[in-house]
Image (cartoon, rainbow, N blue to C red; front, side):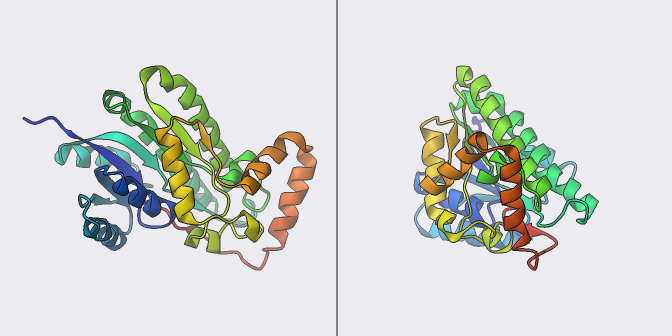
Length: 269
């Protein structure tokens, strides 16, 4: 029986940063398994990549918020004789609005996808990642560096991904496993249009540039990637400004968006 082939697993690959990361990994000749809810988008992306002459990615449509989703991803890999060399956790969504006013179950679902699934998929394949000298790329946000009244739970989930990934980077480097956390600011994707639009336009970066920065950071073994000088400054300010000032600044920015309150801002799951 042949040994399983190494593959890059990318969640949230149906749109936004996840889809662009799939294109970047494909250009560097990685075999891919694309995971997201929207099968038609996954199939279109797989066809697009195949049309460039690269190997057509496998696709696995699934709602990662289902309790058995990560186990089913593992089963899908085994059924296709694949095992992860790289795991890219890009799936996630954000909710814009006061935590006290938003649906509680929806917020718990956000925690489930943004935190539990990222943790599970980061830890589930460590032996395989070590065997192939691969790694993990987790997508957080520049918002993870600061509290976020008006998107409180979303900010908190991204703060978890940031802290978790940095700790894991230190723990796993002795095993030859790279762990990188990508913390973009606003990106020109549907998520930015619908969810993270309260930051000024100067913080917005093209999605292709963000994805390339994440890929290169992972390959170089970087712990943290924050694309763009303005976003680097933004990530640093909460460390030097009083917490009360940061809270007030974010709160004012969110209030300016009070008339834009989608129930759910989803682009990457």
